[in-house]
Image 1 (cartoon, rainbow, N blue to C red):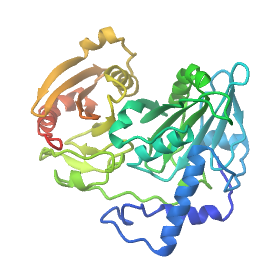
Image 2 (tube, helix red, strand yellow):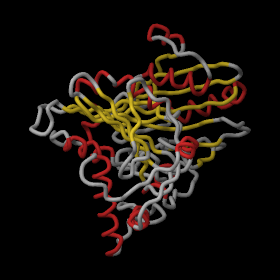
Image 3 (cartoon, rainbow, N blue to C red):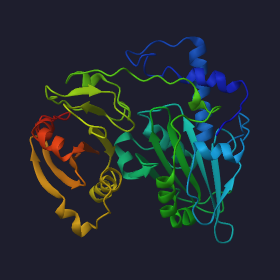
Image 4 (tube, helix red, strand yellow):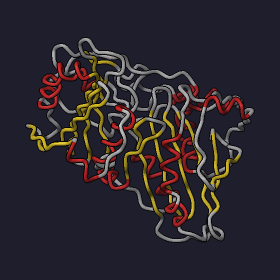
Length: 387
């Protein structure tokens, strides 16, 4: 998928690079220049327009031939959806027609890596529905975990309260986000509340079917040069490293990293990642967190079974076969232990306040057995703020 845009996009891509909260290297905040402040204001203005779906196209986008598009971004089109020509900075658009005048639209938009701003975006969408803004502590009530193109993302479900003169139906928004190394992707369904609710399961399946490109399409705000903070090591460094999910909404706990582990750059949606002795390809030692219950234990167990172990999903009644209660110094948790075809996964899931934390060890049976004690000691060492 290739896109050509006018010269405004080059300026906005430049403006997107230092974050408003951090300097160019992700360290202490730096004072932006006048031009940078103007650029950042322009970026957020465009972001508001794109993610709210309102206003005129600020940037003209031309679509490439379909054979080029298919190589970069793929999906399985649900029944009843119609592909439309994307506008603004959308890389894909779809329309859904329901009974009578009920309709909905779906858009896919890549943006520069945006972390720690979930509450701000939810409040933009709430404003679009003429709802009052919420505080960060309330975010979990509108958030569920979803799979987006094989990655763990988040979905926000927002429903308007009344009809307006311009909208004959009560409106509803489903907005899903996932942060990859090169961009943050937004997939949004907007339309009549009844229709959006009826097509919610289709939307979730559509998210799972997405194949997102490693690099965002040229001409989008996300296609400019991206910088990531350097990896660092040590227990204290884990607190100062910039997490993918953003330190504004995620505060790292204190922990003691085993002497044989080394911290490495976390991937998408991860707060920390480690390498272990003699690890083989596919090994994962990670820490992540989601608002609320993170979608629930069953959803996450089935996602790990499907993506990591190649196992079929299980029912709620079968969950007790692979999980056990766990008492940690930081409180109650759940231990997940699953294996298949010489691979084994250990995961500790713990709900603390408004977030659910996930500690995960995935590798071969032999390596997991060798690292199990270190992994459990690591989890036992975790201390959350105020804990």
